[in-house]
Length: 180
Image (tube, rainbow, N blue to C red):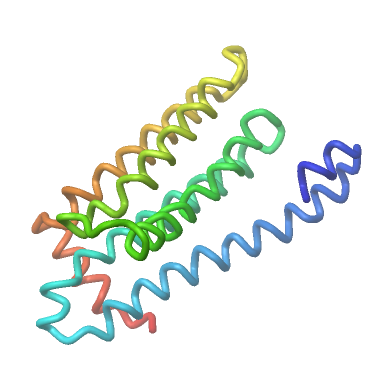
């Protein structure tokens, strides 16, 4: 609705809806953290030892979403950049969609972590296209490049980080927090 409001020169309505959207985005972020916490907090010790590494994905997607939303607000006076960051808030939604579709309708993959590859590849391609289409003279263009590189590193990190002792220590700490 917000792009349509801008096209119709209804900037005040765009801003009003944007304020509501920021509140909804904050609630989305907090609920994502709480859902991730609840899933690991309910695991017994054996299940957590086997499955605890998977908390990386929801936390990573929440971080990408929050980063894009915060940067969209920071760059709200630069329309080309603001719109791209707002578009980037939708990228974390691609992973659950693609992973579930592949899991249900594609032949089984040799490793369950491979179900994320198409969504991560598409998200990286979208970020690349958004960056490439950003005019070279746009103030803040490097900020979008750093965001895109950071998000891509987070996607790639899914295949390495959850298997490290540092992540396991973080996941154990996160699980022990009294959040849910």
